[in-house]
Image (tube, rainbow, N blue to C red):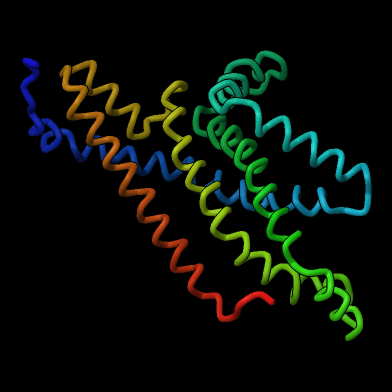
Length: 222
């Protein structure tokens, strides 16, 4: 192997590379919020008494969970404008694609948490005169939130990692900048290693944040 390592390139262009984290977070944070909210709505629909709501949720989850993120991203950014005349920016297309894919995964995480709550707790709340909204607010959601949190965190981390595919539509995140610098200076090992370490740092920090949130639970489920 005759490759000469020159990690000094990261010292020279590290700040430019690291600034891509801002763009990565600008895509991933709205996607995480939309994933979390839409996933919760879909989970509620999948457990609804109404067959139409359950059918819509099942079709949505099965479709967007099986559709590759790359295909969905390219279709939204390049094909959808042809069909509708709406031109989305690269950032907007990325957020929409990651949110749709993430919501399908989050729905299953929520559904598992909601299904794990014993029916006896709902029956006990009803015997105390709680309304359906009060049962949802004070009994079901608090327990389902913490029961779902580890799985939901995995979904959100997947959303962050999927930001790397937005390089295909020129979102200037870390991988895009690493590729741009590699073309100019022919240092792929150093630059892609730096990009990988930046994403590890971002995801590790988010993981620590979510673990601290898990520790807020003050009770054990019955």
